[in-house]
Image 1: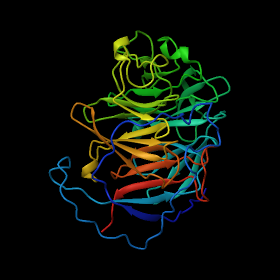
Image 2 (image 1 turned 120 degrees about the horizontal axis):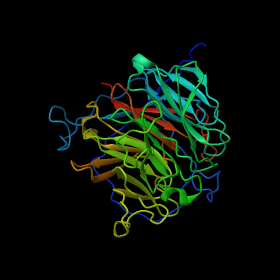
Image 3 (image 1 turned 90 degrees about the vertical axis):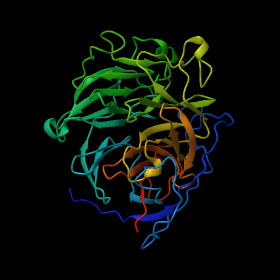
Image 4 (image 1 turned 135 degrees about the vertical axis):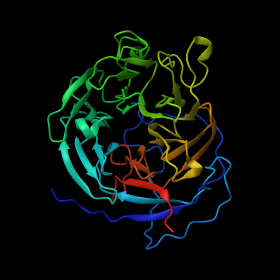
Length: 401
């Protein structure tokens, strides 16, 4: 199939020195069935990214104490890399620099080049409605030798994890994850240990989150062939952590610590620092206050109106030195990208809002091989207010001189 070249448009944003403080009023999470499915959680407007023939030269900014010792802060440019996608959900980068992108509702796997060329490479047999469909995507750590792509998708009976080589039939390696029109989880990612981590939702049955023998409301950990690692916290059990409501973001820092985003219900959305075998409280606790009951408290919370958190990434590249080691989280109802400044212990030292009102609902953020950040919008998912070229992939990168 021929590739379609998409015109890139760019706009510059200045890196903000200040970060917003924690705390805000409560709201309703956009993944909750009680919310109007046609609501975007905002005023439904987006800022048009104006085309510029040549971006302004990099601005001179004072040195940031948290930046790399070899390079000071740089100006960050936001560009539109690709347009006219249908509810993109996840992205995985191939060794040649192209990316694979899933579309939730169509079941398509797309190839997207660094210059924005799009090609459909496969359609998977996803059978979801509501929040179900073709969701997470990950490449084998040994992809250059084994060629395996992993995907998480919905069928009529369950959510499942499959693996396949491009163009071949998918092989199920983990089945029986609870399914519903909402709270399907869906993020998958290989950790530094070479094992596959799977974020699941409670599928509307909150009791499953507290049951260590159920797959719903968990972070699961499996070998690449789907078997259970011998050192999992529960013997012969893929459960790695439990007491979650709906996990859609997984990211590791340079120390190998795992962070996960989680949708709240009526009050607080969360980012959790994950320890194996621990209980994160849902449905007995939402947000802070669970330590006295033996639960692990989140490291950061938001009002559901500010977040509804989905995909996450920790920037490990040095191209944007002032953001090196920071945690990024895509917000759906909040319609913004959150940046968390993490200290050496993995705690949150500060927070900043990016792209507020510029792109609508954001589903995922990922670090590309060139050190930029790719952000997937999700305005054609049934809850957004799309503009004519939605959905889009945005790219945050150092401004061109």
